[in-house]
Length: 345
Image 1 (cartoon, rainbow, N blue to C red):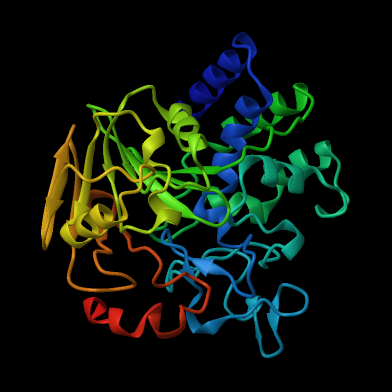
Image 2: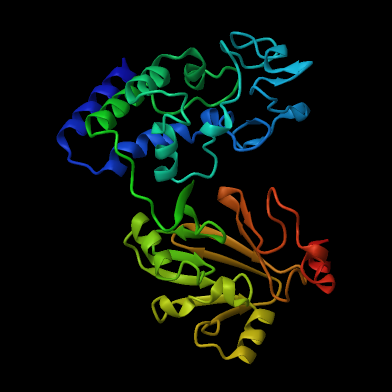
């Protein structure tokens, strides 16, 4: 009953409030990028599992037809329904989505375009897509995943309402933006230009910006304004390299700038107007508490470059360490510089 009331309220709101294409597609995007969906819509040779989206146990592989490999197919473990005794999930036709329908790391614009592209979506029309996403049993598993897994938080009936609203608006896709922005929850946001990545934290008092990337430049401010109209109160320099903090001069004057002492010393030597000197310096550890949010900064020793710090958001379980290891990629030879390894022990 509650789910039906929520769905009806959502339908009424959608009918009464004018919106842009991105507004109609946003709730659809939120469902499609939930771990219950995204773990099988991977861009790699294997499925993922869990809310943390780790690699599937037992080194499971996609296989030539997305059903696993000979002797170790999906159906070997995943039956037509959830198994209460073992906790193994199940639904009819259990399989990975084809690579053409990989949704990992896609912006709303990119995912939407992939979704409606008949060359990639199995030659489905918009009506076919809606039928598939609202009636298919395997898709429906995301709302009844069994064991202790969290289902997609939006009721399926409400999801169907959003899909129909998107269709009535012409099934248009959001315009592509020059950056990618994703909420990590509770005010923490990841932002990327497609090559460089960083994050910012929204607090009750304002915004804490980490690494003002020159490749984003003023678009970093645009990304922040997309989330909040609160002012930037702090800048954090992960280290001194220009390719990570070379747009600091574009941010409002008077913000507090935090860096490790070695970074501050190096920036004093550089005398670069693009990288204003820090106003707050620490040696080993510093805890920033502002507006109900906490960031823990630590410098255990040299890594990548003197002063390169660990940036930890404990409440979000997120750790940022720049230019050392890239998930899915080989690390730099000798971790950048052979002498800059001790801090990683």
